[in-house]
Amino acid sequence: GQSLEQPSEVTAVEGAIVQINCTYQTSGFYGLSWYQQHDGGAPTFLSYNALDGLEETGRFSSFLSRSDSYGYLLLQELQMKDSASYFCAVLHTNAGKSTFGDGTTLTVKP
Amino acid sequence: DAMVIQNPRYQVTQFGKPVTLSCSQTLNHNVMYWYQQKSSQAPKLLFHYYDKDFNNEADTPDNFQSRRPNTSFCFLDIRSPGLGDAAMYLCATSRDRGQAEQYFGPGTRLTVT
View 1 (cartoon, helix red, strand yellow):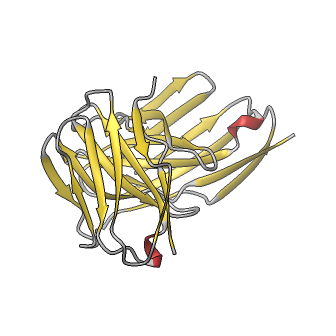
View 2: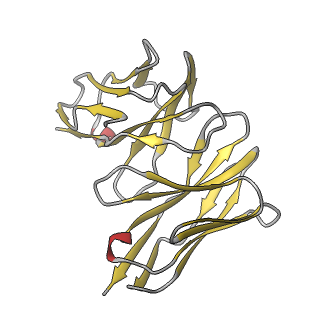
């Protein structure tokens, strides 16, 4: 079967750094994506890792360890607008589709 | 510059009354997806098209069907909506198979009365 696990909720203060972890069990793993979804909005793509290591995009970075079936999203210099749900998603080999985790609700407090 | 458009944004239908949701894209992407998302849950893939090649998820109810008459448009038909089908329905595209980045439309929130 396939499963992705991520914490259901995370709370942090403005200006802080937060890490959202994602572990997965799946066949045909190709890569790991991260999406942000504000309440009532559509998911928006943040990052993708196909290879081990860190990918940095501005305040957001994403990490992947294929041997550990583990990745994380790192958000730095948190802002109030970062309050949202964050989903990790596994891209499946040759299938052209992704399976999403249940999401982590991030609350940023003043 | 709207890229993935969904109509309507809000749809109310009656129990058992067929309903069609539509999605269009201006990106000329090969792959289109339909997801169902219920409150505080992950988007759940219902089906996807790679060009005209239709791919149904094993656990998608028979009540749900889809059509993609051309590259730009895709439709989700719910033949006999039940109360449990009330959800946000998200359409997404990706440039090609194996591309991780998906572009989502704003969604259609379906209410079943």
